[in-house]
Length: 139
Image (tube, rainbow, N blue to C red; front, side, top):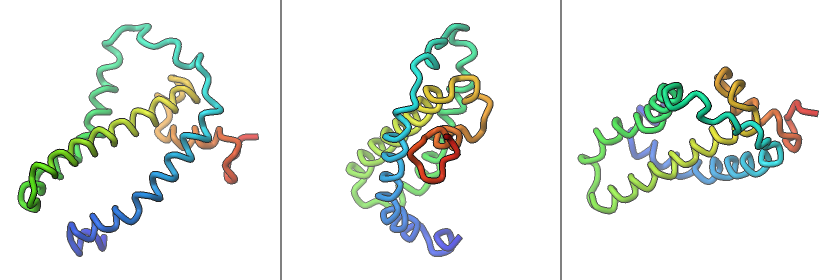
């Protein structure tokens, strides 16, 4: 709430401070969950064709890229060097999309497609399967 009250610059500076922490948590989560991957969970890919996948694809795209529409409303007014900003915006979008794809792929590979599709908090379930986390419930 304070970032909204104090403005866009405060939000951007706090994101710069917290970014290394989030990257460290993401890398540790990804690295520690790799040992629980079961390749059998990826086997039934496209067994029913492309039609059942489209609602999930649209949901993923809207979740990943809808905030960009809001940022593009602010983008032209607050940027001095638009060429560098456009390049950074596109690279950031690609990296963010790649991170989401890796999280979804890990959820499918560890939990399976049925559980991943039914659970709203599948990332929590994936992290609970990890035996190296100190707060994990898997034994």
